[in-house]
Length: 334
View 1: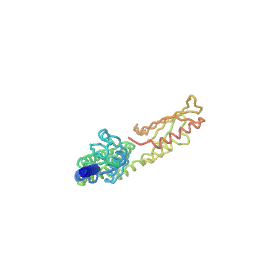
View 2 (view 1 turned 90 degrees about the vertical axis):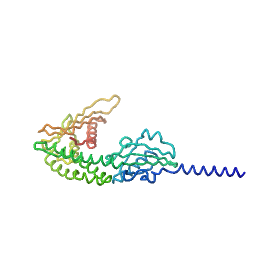
View 3 (view 1 turned 120 degrees about the vertical axis):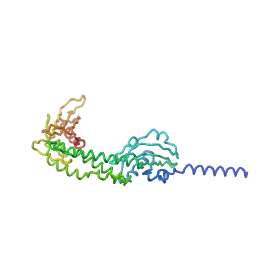
């Protein structure tokens, strides 16, 4: 009887010990720097109910180190998904965010970030480790900042005879680049302050570019002309275009101008078998012109169809849909 009791006690002790060991998390869960040296890597751990949520959480935590936030949707990667599903299992692999996590954020510039490891705890919680190699990332951002400096400088180098509208479009692109360059600089400062100081003279102020752009835009009044079979009901399209142009900083004018946003609208009725409503199809073509230089910018096209109980109602509905599309879709680009 004593032998049986002793054997039972030993087996129970072994079972308790094995269960305890199985529940122990990998060291990186509580102390990433124990595995990934903090002088070489920036790390962040996230948790979630599954791998997707844990990776999104880890990327959020990593982004917060740079003073930014992120909304992430994850996609399964083959090497990690195949290992997923075993409680307490620790698996690792290099997962490139640009391939496996769709980021809906202004931190798309967080290049070189990886989901390095994930672990499923016995209670069902998933942990993920995100990291950035400081050396590789710092080199990348230093190069990109220098390249953006050269690109911006070229864009804002206006020579006599250049089209003012073309110059405005170049300055608009330069402003977007300057904002990106400053974003890169803020990330580089966290990665390696010494490297950031080396490229400090390459940084171009977005505010300075914006001020110069605004001065140029004052010399480029844009006339909006609308042609087509039905014209512009209640000035819906003219107002929509004017609002978009003004949001970019341009002035609009009712007078004819060297600078013109030319728009053509076509709306025509068609029959849909079995449908008593009046159906119409619509198209809209638009392009921004410097008529003196015969330069074209920002081509835009959209089409669709709709219907209503009356033809007038169907046409009015078409204009409402066009107005909505313009407000949501139309952008200025060179």
